[in-house]
Each structure stands twice: as structure tokens, then as C-alpha cells.
Image 1 (tube, one colour):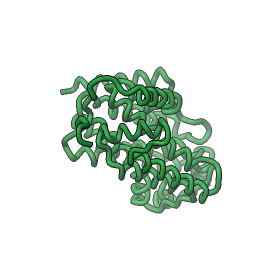
Image 2 (cartoon, one colour):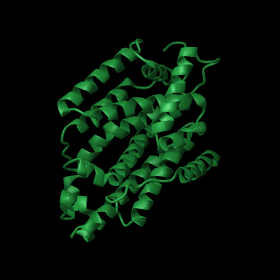
Image 3 (cartoon, one colour):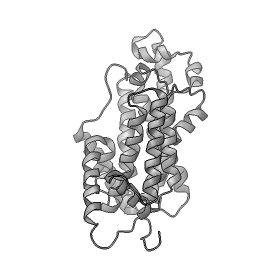
Image 4 (spheres, one colour):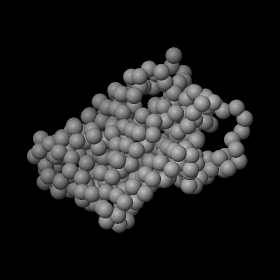
Amino acid sequence: MEGRPAAGEELSGALAPELEAAYHQCALEVRQSAGNFYYAFRLLPASKRRALHAVYRFCRGADDIADGPGTADQRMDHLEAYRLLLESALRGRPTGPEWLTLADSVERFRLNPRHLQDVIDGCRADCAPLVIETEADLKRYSYGVAGSVGLLSARIFGYSDQRVEVYAVELGEAMQLTNILRDLGEDLGNQRCYLPRADLARFSLTEHDLLLGRRGPRVDAYREMMAFEVDRAGEHFAVGLRLVPLVERDARGCPAALAALYQRLLVEMRRRDFDVQTQRLSLTPARKVRLAVSAWLRATLTP
């Protein structure tokens, strides 16, 4: 990477036309599919925003394969083919615009290729029936699909304090647990339960009780368990948000905005009395904009 700028530093001059076109296409795809992430990325400097778009699209591609059609073995094979495309791109032979932008972002921000591999490994876990017995199992799973993404993102934000790496993983785990709680009914309908069996046993619940939620006979125990999990997510957020003042000021608003959006989902879960089975929980675009801008301003203006 000799001759490249340090992480977070802008290249002088315009991008090569092919690369600029590839990043433009990447931005369009992210805008269409990224949901909460798009609003948090929007105010980043151009170079950091482009890199996060490239990483997001890579992660989304792996996730789409894991959740896509075919048998578990077929999806795992597709992920291994995806891994080969990644390795080719990192060796300087990208096979399409999505790989061109990723390879450029890896070089520009000195991203650790191991973390990209970890994303694919994490998605492999979703290809077959997943059994999560303990909180430690959940932590390992969340690292692959979220914590590793946090590390990639933190590198793009820019930092010198190594504590940021610990906090980035925590923030990723907080967001992943929020996703798990929001999508609880949908995942159970697809025969997936990402909450530890130890937690279910603690509240004398079964997966069927979680599928029924507030409509089931164990409604009080269900509420207690969901409150416990929401509190756990809140604890992860409290630790993860410590990275905000430690990353470069021009990027602080991004993790702050992401956290604000996901924390609002936790608030809405409580407001709905933890009914995540009958209607998908989401925020309106206007509300996302307000939350993201407010979080950006607080994070950027705080000394």
C-alpha cells in the first residue's frame, strides 16, 4: 500500500472514471437497501462514505446468499464462491464494479482482510439450523455478522486509541441483538431462534412461546424475558458508544446516528409491549432523519 494516504485521508484529485462510476452505482444500491445505515452514512466525508457503502454492499451480498434459495450445502458453496471473488479482488483482480470499490476501499483505508473473511464465516452459520445455547454462543455468532463489521467501520472512521476496537465490537453486538429482537417472530417462522436457549430456560419459555408472544399463555414470562434482552442490548450500547469521542471528529456522527436509530427501536419495542410478532417494527423516514441529524450534531459538536 505504499504511496496510499493514511486511513481517512482524502486522495488528491478526482477518482478514475471507472472507479467513480462503480462507487456511484454502489451508492445507488445502498440507498435502495440500506435502511438505517443510509441515514447514518449520509453526512460522512465523501471518501469515508464511499468506503462504508462498499463494505455495506459486500456484507449485504454475503447475507443475501445465506438467506437465499437453495439447500444449506448449496448456499455454503455459494458463499465459498463469494470468498474466492473476494480473494481475487484483494489480489488486484476485481471481477466487477462491486469488487472494484471494495478493493479500493481496502487499500485506501488499510482494512484488515481477515474481518471481511469473518463476515463470510458469520453468514455461513445462517445457512444451516443454528443452535445458540448460551450468551457466549450468541457473542460468537454476533461477532461474525456484526462485530467484524464494526471493526471494518471503525477503521474507516479513523482512530488511534486501540480501545475503539473493543467498543466497535460491542456496538455491533448491540445492533445485532436489537435486530434479533425486532425480527423475533419472522425468524421463528423460518425456524431460527437466535436467543440463547439458556435465556429461554431462565424464564421457562419455549420457542413456541416466543412465536406466540403476547398472544400466548406465558405472556408475563415473555414480557420479562424481552425486557431482560432489551436491557442487555442497552448495556452493549452503553459500552459501544464509548468509541464515539475516540474516532475522527468528521466521522463521529455516524456511529452516534446508528446507535440512536437502533436504540429508538428498543424504545418502540417497550412501547408496543414487546409485540414483535404481529407487525414489523420500523421507523418512518422522517423520524430516521430527525434522529440521525440530532445524533450527528451532538456527537460532532461535543468537545
